[in-house]
Length: 52
Image 1 (cartoon, helix red, strand yellow):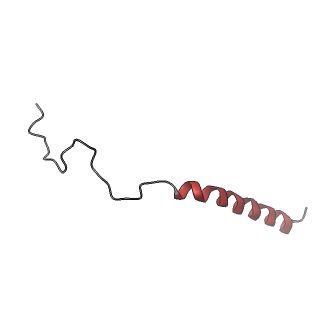
Image 2 (tube, rainbow, N blue to C red):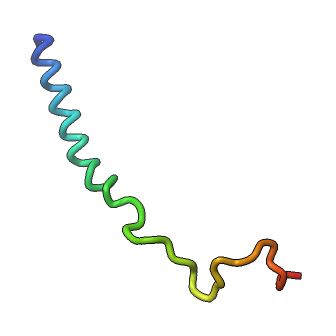
Image 3 (cartoon, helix red, strand yellow):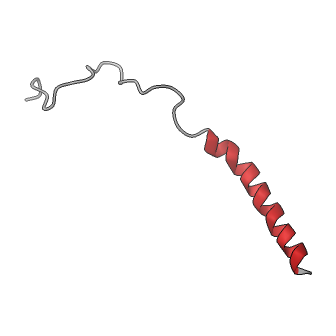
């Protein structure tokens, strides 16, 4: 196998791996602004004076 053929094979494998990985990586993370959990007061004073 010639070295140019070997290089093309590696490039093809790399491109295939990137093609498969990109949709999974682009789906990570939230798409909107952060929101506080339900039932919490935000922002809150620290330390919380209600907590005993």
